[in-house]
Length: 153
Image (tube, rainbow, N blue to C red):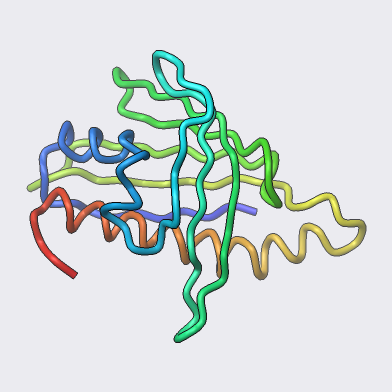
C-alpha cells in the first residue's frame, strides 16, 4: 500500500518544517489530533505516540499508533517507522522542498498491510490507506498549512 498526499503551502520552508517537526503541538493546532506524546526523546526525533480522529460525517473513529521519528534537517525530511498499532511496519516520509511562493510538502506512506492471512493487503489497499491514512494525512497537511499561513478554517 502506498499513499501520497501533497500540498503547496504559502509559507517559507523553514516555518513549515518547524511546524511539521513540532508534533507535540499538533493537538493544539489540528482538531483531529487527540494527543501526541514523546515517549522517548532523542536529538533528532524519538519515539512518539499519536492518536487522531478519522471523521465520518457526525461520527469520529479513533486511531492510535506509535512511531520511531527521525528528523533530517539538512534534507528537510521527517521519517517515521510505525512500531505499535495496527499500522506497525509502516514507513512514512515527509518531504519538504522550496516551491514558487512557498513550500511543497509531500507525505508518502508505504506499508505491506496488517499480517492478516488472505485479506491484509486488500484491507490496507482498499480501506486503511485511502480511507484512514489519506483521510488523516490530508487533514494534517491542510491544518498545518492554515497554521503557518496564518489563516483559519
